[in-house]
Image: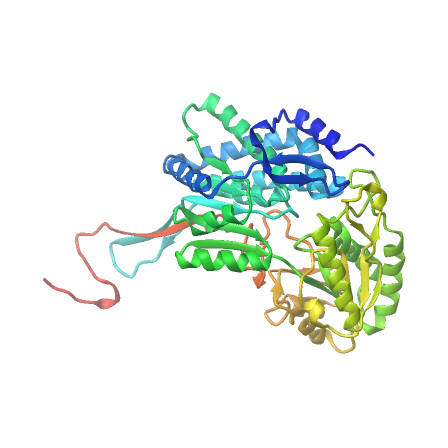
Length: 510
């Protein structure tokens, strides 16, 4: 296969992107597919990070007064550039994050769709008229930009998370500061490059409309992210990543009474009832459990199967798991690419050791394709039969591990098993029973942010509510009112009468 360094140079050329301004010795970026060193980058210091926030704040003061549909036009241009460079950016996602080619392309397509979504929202940032109890008065709600939006993103969706936040923040009148995962900064540099090109195009038609510093990119680790969490200039901090990171961010933002949007981890479950279409379920399970090498926040981790259909379903899954194509993510036909790094592999092995100690029977999970590189970490997806839901199943491991437990009672028993973990991102049920489906989606059903019927534990389509509950953060990155997370609501009362009646019948005569 073509080495990753060569592939990178081709991608950079296609995007007209020069990395020399970012070169340094602070971060070494490796390609998961073969372990090759892609680049050495310089990190921003905390002082530089704070300066970037101040610059973004100055930009916000000007950008907030630009009409929202005009702000939407900038995002529309970004979407156009993403369309033109979809192939190159998608390949860069595959190179840096290890996603198979179709998933890399799919993530860029999600960015494009998000831009379209945000452009539509740019004409819907409006409030409501509120009934007033006082005659001759009118009340209304209005919505205004918040300020600087800080974005902290994870390696598993290195560009889509940014796009969700950036597109919505920009149309809402905010400035943005982005700290990507230190494992995937090259894709971030590429996105910033395309946004700056969109700004340049926009500026030629509307000179002076886009203020300098509207979008800032910060390369670095926890120290840089800590600046965003602590800065009072960062009105909204949207953070995607581990629960550990989220707890730290949430506390820091709460200390200064800021606003946080958190989407943290997964540990997602699927219930398969006796009436399920097993062939449909098997396909959905496989994609949800092993796609992106099990490193999505929406990865299926727990399979809760009724005993009456468990043997038949597991026979199907074992056949699939033995034959699924693991290898170079850029090679056609590959379905499972590499883990992001050695640390991910070691975490997977520790989880499997614990699963065996808790009575699990493990199929797969071993390292494969060592021929592709000593520093490339490919694994056979693991299918683990568990006697019961145990401690290892209550913790998320970012790897292709699918724990399977049986239930014998009714659907309420399965729902209780699903909900009995600290996380609450995505969930699914496969059933032909309308009653089971409705129960699963009811207030007494799944306690997750996403509850799907006869489809896997995916995130939502564009425009749906995506986010989590419990330890997974409760954040929302989309939905019909997504824009409200990036704006502040104001209530206005207008008195057009000559009198001054008070609310609740209060009298105060002077």
